[in-house]
Image (tube, rainbow, N blue to C red; front, side, top):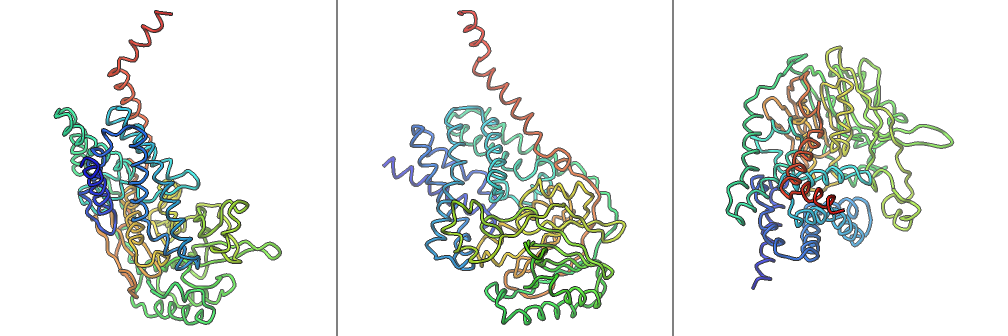
Amino acid sequence: MQKFTKIGLFLLSLCLLVLSTPGYNYYLFAYFALLPFFYAINKLELRKAIFYTYVHFTFFYMITLSWIVITISEFGNAPKLVGIILLFLFSSYLALYWMIFVFVFKKGFNIVLISAFFTILEIIKSWFLTGFPWLNLGITQYNNPFISKLYSYIGELGVSFILVLINLSLFYFFTNKRAKYLYGILIFIFLVVFANIVPVNNKQKLSYLKIATIQPSYSQKDKWDPNKKEQLIDNVLKMYSSLEGNYDLIVLPESVFPTFCNEDDWIINYLASNKKSEGVIFGCLRYEGKEKIEYYNSVYFLKNNNYEYYDKIHLVPFGEYFPLKSILKPIEYYFFQDAEDFSLGNEYKIFELNQDVFIASPLCYESAYSSLVKKFLDKGTDLLVFLSNDSWFGKSKGRYQHLAIDIIRSYEFHRSVVRATQSGISACINPLEKGVVTLGISKKGVLKCDLPIIDDKTFFERVGYNYLIIIIILSLIYEIIKRNLLIKLFKKGNKK
């Protein structure tokens, strides 16, 4: 009977965690989703607890990252079995971080230290082996209206810290029946009230920019069909030409034209000669060199018949380059066939729309890296423009997960965000009004919005996650005092 009870607790926790993620959007579940999980592993011996954790979170990631199979098998042309195997292997890798977390949990440290350790694990996951800053626990609150300002103080991973702290507080309160364990919830209430009461100093360089975002919504399978190249380009240019009114900025998605723009430079000339706005941003591939050709995934910025470009710096493994080729050579063909890797860009380029407004356009997956976005902001960025081709996700929850990341970046740094995608979800994100206007999946059209230009640095932009150092030091001091470690060391020294 106890075995079935434990399985029920694991399943309940799994369901609550999945439903709290973007696309399902039951964000309140995240505040107690780990509670049944803690109950299930609490009385287990360490080895069994770690094993059950592995199974539990491997299933969690296989469900929430199921779009990997779509990306690899449907659009990457690999056999479906290859996609499923890679999903399982990657989910198993991500479950390792939870296994380490459970090891610390079972050691009985104080809940602040355990929560801080969890946050450190998410930081490591976000950069180790090129990093995967995706589906951090803090992403679940992206559409919680009371939390949006909190992101500007403690960031996405700080919200992860708070969620683990609340789950632990509830668990120890219910198991020990002692009110002292509710201080984690009191910390959360204080932070939320503080973030929402303290006014944000919103200096504005310019009241609002008038922006149009084009979503052509053509099929990803048609995109690189040479027989459909002219048709697709013509479709995008017709949408551009049909725009009426004067805009400050027109935005088109990542690699929106299925060609190399330095080869088909007539496209740039067409956009320049049919001026609809002060500036145009669009994604396009380009190459350099003759004997050794290097390919780049780039963002073009067109203004006054002149253009600049930014080359993507953080490439997607298995999507834009193939890592560990000497080891993984046998399966490389399934991903790239005979295609070449993209090359890395080397400059965090920002574009000057006018003397008051500077724009940065981290490309697609790059928006998931808060530290990378900050490097653009350090150069004086006023507006963030994220171009993406989320067609690779199919119609899965992956599109909502990526949108949630971009919303959080807007809240963390208090910058307006324009999001242009090939077939949804394009968006305009206004951090002042907590407003998000979207153009949905597979909808062809133009998203129009007015966004404020904010000249201000949030606490998170200034400090980052350095505040965690103070939290860890204080919680370690508390742990040392609680366990009388100094006294034990002193007595041990006297005996010698």
